[in-house]
Image (cartoon, rainbow, N blue to C red; front, side):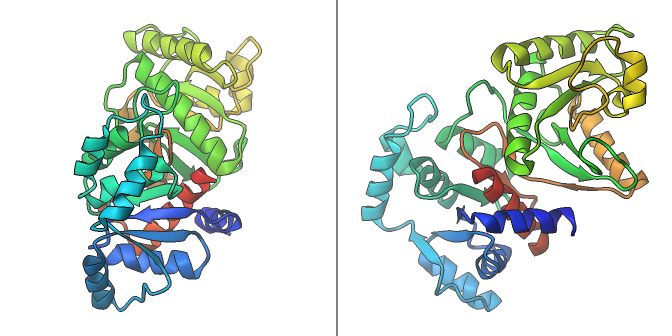
Length: 332
């Protein structure tokens, strides 16, 4: 069974209500139909019913058995807003008036519904830009405690690699923060640990990567990593984080035994790798894909107070279904 098949089966164990606001897109309804039919989740279509009917007719998909939230229904909107006002004030940036104004946009409507408890998670991004998804989530849902910036992790499947979780490794940040500062790196690590634990059930063992291992090299980047580790340990002493480590020290037990002359819960057995910047992460995951024939999955955003997925606009329906399964698991 492939990783995505495994994740889909896990999502089916406890299907959650997932808001799908981008109903003008054919792929939204094609994916919603599969999610419904296969029992992966409970799609909630959030848009103008006329738009939904037009898309459904165009692609030949029935939505008769799906829940539709009519964003033009003022009575239900008032109910959602009233419940949203009970959401912690320090997590939302929207006032009652602001929420009412923003809910003309289906994506805002969906995430406000999520914050208010009407749905469990939201999937979008193959119509809206990443910037728009992030802005909406930050305003409507807010960040989790101890996290300052959102991030994206990739769950990679690497042939011929045998680590602490078999052929699987989680990498971050793979999409949002080009040059993270120390507190940004700390936020990325905390959010990734929490998301990977929710998704995979792993006990997170998080290594901060560098060209240096425990002071073997000196540079501002090394200082930044060590400050990030200090911040994580201060904010979340329950998490197992360590570094700075070179890649082999992080994942190869024999190398870790030679280079790390102290007790470590992470060295040689890391299942989460935190890259020092986006350039390194992008190069790393593409090397896995090109040279090792590996695969990378994941558009679930880490760091928000509730689960949100930001899909790629080039995603296929199969990829969207897989991403929906991942955000549903995060909501479980």
